[in-house]
Image 1 (spheres, rainbow, N blue to C red):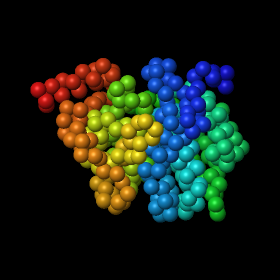
Image 2 (cartoon, rainbow, N blue to C red):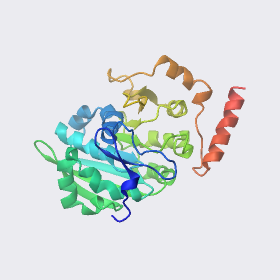
Image 3 (cartoon, rainbow, N blue to C red):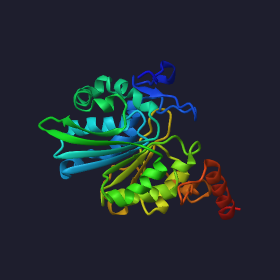
Image 4 (tube, rainbow, N blue to C red):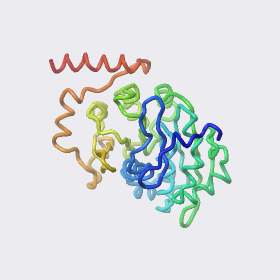
Length: 298
């Protein structure tokens, strides 16, 4: 834990912890609350109740795991629902170890008390911020559920494409949570989102991200998926919820895009980022997008 520094940490408005990224200068989470953002922008849009009551085995992919708020909040909410599920698989991808070193402080939050007890006793390596494969028990109201947790280190541009032949259509939910498209466009490409479509469980698989960028939403639509917005948190706009066409009309509570948001998708702002071989630099991707914008909208 010696690599921790209080200078790196920020306490958000709901009392939860976040970090400031040295390279991008961005906070890992919304100032209104790391826990609140995870709950409202990522977990609640999944509509867990029918999933937990219908699926014996659940699987989730957490891309850019960071401090782990999205996954930990997800597990908290599933425990509160008392699911019929026998097992929950989580595959989490993170490039850097630094944010993992704060997991013990994240789980020390009273909202994660039961989860903290299970992780500390059954998966101490996870609590210490180590990459690896872990199993622990999630205590629910009337039963316990086994959690299989695979925390992978790597660049998501290499890891996610390699998962398509390995996993297939297994994930009920995918959390996409890198830094913003303007900072790291290589992590927001149509090519990456096409992989997500191939990894989603049919018909109910869902992708959730905090970004409302037109280039991001347009990319998902060009992959043949349906796009909705999520509730705003703090001063930011709502994020994006993505579902397969076969599941687009099943739930009436989803928030459709506003007219002005939909119009932007068809315009210059909706031109997606592209990186078909998952190897271009940020500058190369931005330059190629600008060239495509000029071609389509001279």
